[in-house]
Image (cartoon, rainbow, N blue to C red; front, side, top):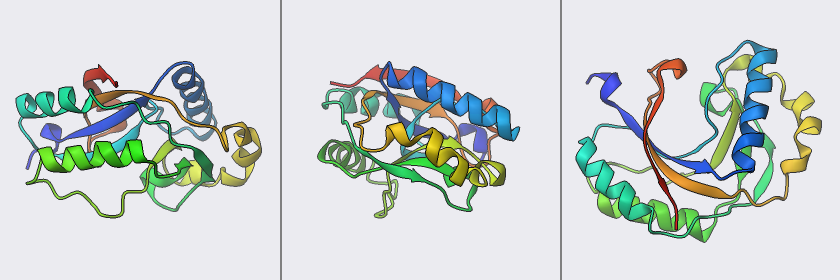
Length: 173
């Protein structure tokens, strides 16, 4: 399968959170020398479904209310795409979006272990900053993260972050 044809479904934060999170991602990328990227919560990643079909699915998802999950904590794992992230509490709004996505794409296997998060840095260098960033980012803990759009993005684990591209964006609600 050609990885450039793979896409992901993201939820993008609303402003002013989007602007503040982009600044944090850019700051961490500058310190660590790693890739900067757009702030997002991945609903479903690395899928190969015809774009026209996904466009309709996204328009349907966009009719749902915008979720506002609480940020539980700053967390990190020794994996590239979970190196440094805001851990989000599961909520009814996120569950509704995932259920609608699953119903619309029955051929795509959704993981039962959906762990909503918003990454702030990728890779080992970002992960190494977990302790330092805990103080810098403590203001996010306990806040509701306003998510404002559902997006179709050309992205996959094997596609360089610099090549990720938002193909469509639809306001939620």
